[in-house]
Image (cartoon, rainbow, N blue to C red; front, side, top):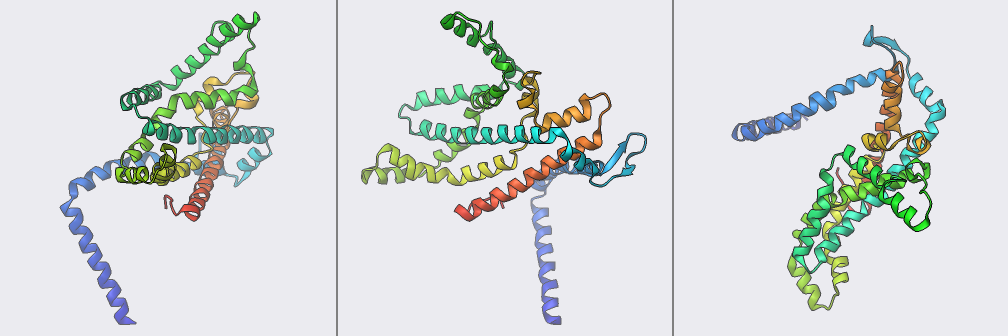
Length: 319
C-alpha cells in the first residue's frame, strides 16, 4: 500500500516537472493564452458573484453583501407573476422557431453552394449573402420597418397598388412579430453562419466524389452520402451551442421591434429583465437578477441535455 502511494506521488512529481518544462519552453504561447483567460475571469466569472443579489432584498445603501437575505422569495415572486407565463411562452416560441429555421438553412445553403457547378457565380452569391451580417442591429431593424411600412414602404406600396386599399399595419400585429424577427435574421445571418460549413466542405477528400461518380452516384446522392456526413460533426456541435443559447433571444432586436401593439408577443425574458431592473421608476435589481439567473439555468440544462442526446445518437458532443 505504501509502495503504491509512493508511486502515485512520484507520477505526480513527474507530471509537474514535465508541465514546468513545457511552460518554460513555450512561455510565449502561455502568455498569449493568459490574456483571454484574464478577460474571462474579470468580465465573465468575476461578475457571477453578483448572483447573490437574486437571494437578497437589494438595498443600494447596504450593498450586495449587506442587503437582507430573502432566500427564494424573488424567484417565487417571478413564478407567481402574471407575466411569467407570457414571457416564458414568448421566449420559447421565438427561440424554438428561430432555431428550427436559422439552423438548417445555412447548412442547406452551404451544401447547395458547394454543389453549384459555376464556382465564380457561387463566390459572388456567398459574398452577397455574407454582407448583411455586418449591418448593425439598429440599421437592420430600421430597414425592416421601412420596408414593412404600411404607407410608404415596399409592402404598403405594393398592397395599395394591387388592392387599392391601405395596407394593414403588419408591425403592429402580435401574430406577425415572430415571423418578422426570425426571417429578418435568416436574411442577415445565413451567409455568415454558412461559412463554417463551407470551410468543412472544402476539406472533403475529392477521391470520395470520384469514387462515387464511378459507382454511378448522382450529384444529389454525393451530397447526401459524401458531403453531409463530412459536415455532420460540425453541425452537431453548432446545434448543441445553439440549443444552449435557446433562451437568449436577441435583446436589442426584440426591443427595437417592440411596440404597444405587439407587446403581447414580443415581451421576452431579456426585455422583461430590462423592464424590471431599469425601465421602471425604481429598479428592482434583485428580481431582475433572479429572472436572469433562471434564464441562465434553463440554458445550462438545455446545453447538458442536448449534448447528452447527441453523444448517445452519433457519438459527437462538446464534452
